[in-house]
Amino acid sequence: MGFDIDVLIVFAEKDNEENEKKEPGWVSQFKRFLELMLNQVLGEKSNIMLKAEYDNMVSPKLDNVGVIVPILSKEFIQSGSCLDHVEMFIKNTESSKGRNRIFKVFKSPLGAQEQPPKLRDLIGYDMYQLDSDSGEVREYTDYFSTEAERQYWMKMVDLAYDIFDTLMQLRDSSAKAEVKNFYKRKTIYLAETGHDLSVQRNIIKRELQRHGYIVLPNQTLPGTFAELEKMVQHDIHESQLSIHLIGSAYGEIPVGSDRSVVDIQNKIAAEKSVRARQSGEEFMRLIWISPILNNASEKQKGFIENIKRDVEAQEGAEILQTPLEDFKNIMREELVDAGEKKPAEENSGRSIYLMHDRVDVADVKPIREVLEKSGYRVLIPQFEGELLEVRKKHIDNLRSFDAAIIYKGKVNEQWVRMKALDLLKAPGFGRKKPIIGKAIVTTPGSTLNVESFKSQNLRVIHTDPQHSSEPIKSLLKEFNA
Image (cartoon, rainbow, N blue to C red):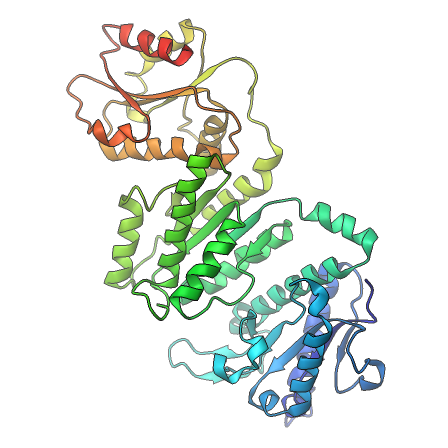
């Protein structure tokens, strides 16, 4: 499907008046910047038009237009012709099978009830300057200031990529084959965040889209709990991965709930993790917790502590409290590269992942020798190198092992719990084959709540590997059986 006009910008005349210096109006500046950005993303010249200037080239039905961008403001809402254009476009694009072809841009803040009813649920792009301390709203006059770089340009890039996504899917049949190949990757649920992480979320969203991932939610989350829960459940059901960014802000609390949107999304994702593990479905979660939480409320601190301690809240999740750049590197490694890499030596015989801490390297040596003499290839953790390298080795081992032994020597029970959770999450890292056995090996005098591990099908073996290898050999017979 080809269009004469890629993007049509609909706006109220008052929003494009020249300033005192006779410089181009706000909408004209917006068009110029969007054109520059969209041309870069498309790799070719885009055709963007202002409705008021090109009425003679635009069909009254707007059926030669790919997408429209309404510039929402008080003046827009009061303009009958602007509202008519939106209504006409909606009427003539009902056959687009749910594909969003309207991208609403806010020149100034508007509450949901002030917006045209059919635009309320669409994701908006705030192009005004908001002072986080005073709450004062101003228009940008310096488009290249540090503040504009953080807000205006960030939203402009998001808008360009979202329009690109839609235009690509509206192209003719020959291009559709390429688009289908482009979108061969997973659907990812990128959870909405508190206000303090909205910029970081946008950066990650943009990067995921650049690599061809479909990112949900693709519309504004409802303000009531019942509707929000329904939408989040649907979107997470469609996804193979969810990413949650947690900072100092607890987040908005929808009507009818005592939990924040951030909390609710995490809870629904955890519930899917449980179902996915039981059914063998592919689903995993990445949770990033900001290492700087100086301004966090007591409620937010409690929420974060619950995520760290509660086994149910951690279900199927990889929890990282690292600098954001480290998290993004890990995310890239896992999403962009992992799908194309096969676990090393996956078919070279049965392997056992002997999970132990650095402090137990010497003590675990006799167990390793027994395993190797029994014909197993022993996978061990990596302790030297950069964080990303160490973690990559751990993920590769989780993908490829046949059986696993967690060694509890000088470490505490919490360390053992984290490794047990890693075993539960292994399918989410791209693991394809079943686990033939898993166990925890403890040393004399070691205390462990054995009952708490039974639900994870983890045997607990008490042994002294320095003096007897029989318990380990007996365990291996169980694995082979």
